[in-house]
Amino acid sequence: MKRFLPTMLAASCLLAASAANAFTTYTCNGHDVKWSGNSKTLFAYLPDFPSGSSERNALIEAVARLNENSSPFVFNLVYTNTVPSLDNDRTEIWIDNIAWPGVTYTWWDNNCNNFTEKDIIMDSSVSWTSSANKYYQWSYDDPSDTIVAKRPMESTILHELGHALGLGHEADEYNIMGTDWNHMSTNGNAAYTYFGEDANHGARYLYGSDGTQDLGVVHWRRIGNNGEYSTHGRTRLLDPNTNTELPFTMVKGEPQYNVNRGQTVRMELTFENNGSAYQYEDVGYYVSTNSYISTGDRLLTSVSFGQSPANVYTRYQDVTVPSDLSCSKEYWLGAKIDKDNSLAEFAEWNNATYIPIKTNWNFSCLVLQPIIIQPLALN
Amino acid sequence: MQKFIPLLAGGLLLAAQAQAHHVLNNFDIGEMAQQADSVFRGTVVDVSYASSNPVKGQGAIPHTFVTFTVDEVLHGTAETDRDNTYTLRFIGGQNNKGVMWVDQLPKFNIGDEDILFVKGNGEAQCPLVECANGRFRIVDGMMHNEYGQAIVEDAKGRMTLGAVNERIKFAQHKIGKQTLQKRTHYVNGFDGKGNDVDIPRPEAAKVTMYDAGSFIANSHQQIHKKMPNDPLGVNKRAVNVNKTKAFELRMSKKAQ
Ligand SMILES: [Zn+2]
Figure 1: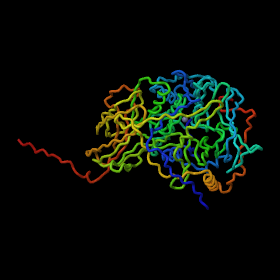
Figure 2: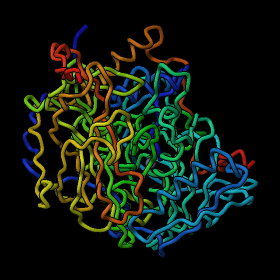
Figure 3: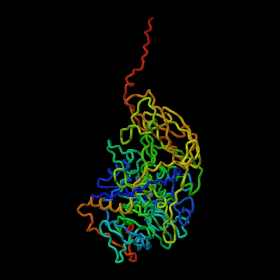
Figure 4: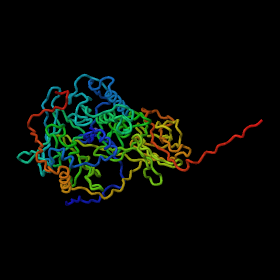
């Protein structure tokens, strides 16, 4: 069969250097459209979010994460039995069988100055989880367990709330307005959704700053884009000499890197300044015998660097795997930001994360530690 | 709006795998055509607005009617009017109160030239296969998706998505008298020492972009490969909608 050759184009017109794209907003006749005030009532349809339900839990968490944002804008959540509908001048959220996992309908007035209504519908046909246990979530699906991992409802609702606040999709940063289900802050077995640096920046652009601060570190990063959505992958452990990813095995659904004791490795982690002001960040890098990283773990190195609250920072840090670790054993490298807890943050639970490792067995493992034999004391 | 996950039979596992492997930038023209009622190349000649008739529990909702001249049919039949036009109906548009839209609906302007994978016209809120993914744009003769990403050929000869043409991505879009535009906000990178710096972009490799002709030719091949017994989709019909005829929006189990 004849093969049709696409046109060859040398893409030489790209700029050598440029600023990066960040959050997006929508303009009408040249100006931004947003809510006229700093708060909006969000009516949740009670039969879809009954008390004690997982849907209610997901909604409460998502609204709380939105309301933490570093602008003054908040949604006030009100449960109601009033049947929701489009174009009733009420901003509502309900669950129905729809074509998309989640959708936000946006309305504005004829002067296109302000939103007049936003309606969020979540799809009833999606298998959702509202669990913060990471093994219940798609991004941490452990094929060896019996748990059926599902899409986290909180993260998708938070993405829709981002639309409801006034943000569009964003493909060029690691951010919640891209792919939502792997925009997670994870330490130990808990994985929480969060609004993130780029969306907080957008919220402050639209509504101003409320002066609150927050720092965070995650083991996710932007790896590309799919249409308007950023796509995210795990941060890696690299060989500092070649800057290539070290060998890993998938263990319980996560990449576990094979390292030698005494080896210097390059840790890739994503740091976010979600708050209102530039911060110098105090970061400790640790090795732990479990996946929960805390200041009680063994400190490998401390660094500090500055970060403006505008641009997600996937950062590299070389650390040396201690020579006295056990051989053929699982450990977790990790980092904790604001380790001295010197900054008052609106979220203190997003300050640490991990990268799983396993020490290789090699000949150094044969070397016995000298045993000191005490001479018998004779008397 | 959140993106469509390719949920096939046995869906969740496949979906989880698909996103775990990050192969999202590949798409399958044959698969999309199989899902479609019709695939055609057309040019937007009219965009107009009308609201649905109110039903119990749901008032009138603005809709947009996008009319194309059909220049070439690749698969199935688009039931065109006598003047060779075909109209798609999307939720969103304008009424006397203002404007309503949804983030991921494709945004059409008069004069746009597209290849469309039509599905469920007159019923679906977005009558394209995977909504905006079912629209491919021809701009300056070259193929792009809704978001201005170039359609390129990867090393294995598959169609995939390439660099973004920001002129397309951030183009103005008319809704009645209002001009809607997505605005991106630029930030500087920084070096971790507190200094904002320009972020160098990696040197772009030579990319192989599809022009409209090679895209259509390649699509014919992929459709033939997927549906060797019925590449033309002889019994498939994409119904036309009449923009002057009353219609209802039954979007909700709560609005009967
Ligand atoms: Zn969205």
